[in-house]
Length: 291
Image (tube, rainbow, N blue to C red; front, side, top):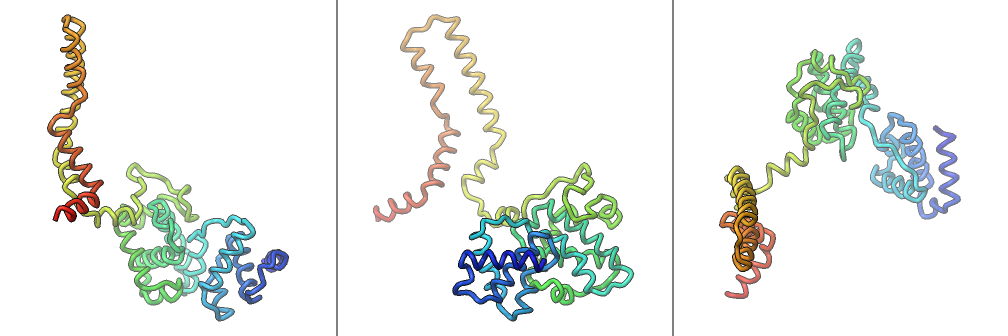
């Protein structure tokens, strides 16, 4: 990794990227870039602790550097850090069992959209603490938090999100028998009910979303809308049949054609609610001006 990092640092010097920045910070960014490229189990906070610098400063330099050089970085896979973190828990003979179970849990978390947009250390912490309890190894949350370097609130959030998925109701035997040994979604053996869950943020937004008058009206009468559409189709077919059979005057046919495109009472009510919901600001302005 050192030789590759030196090449990147020379490139940074040629691009005048070092100007105005400390050499140590740029060196850390180059080393981390190589680690990400080679999918090594090193985090950015490891470099910041060595040079005693805020991790966000090095992160900003790293992002600017890859943007300047137009390099594409692979996604930070949580499964890369499982063996490293489990080894620090000192589980002795149970290290391999806990690590393999944690990898299988990580694969399910990825399938259920828990890894998207999240830092890998939080997922690793949740998977490790669940795997430890599954194999009767008691490790407190404080120990796991200290190893994976996340806040207790982050670890609690990942555990709650996993608890809301179908994978949380599987037994140890079911989890170990369904693949995912390398922490990848592709290696899971899909069951009949092995359907991916909705993303956690989507579930949270559905709970917080207020129930408006429009949504309440549409939820109350979903069947009536289908029946109304069917009756309108039947009416249109009968109108066309009557027009072909009976010789109607031009004025009567015009009236019948127009009536096909007019809304009934329910359609008028639905469209009124949709318009009022979409133009709430305009309605409030008009009411304020009238006062």
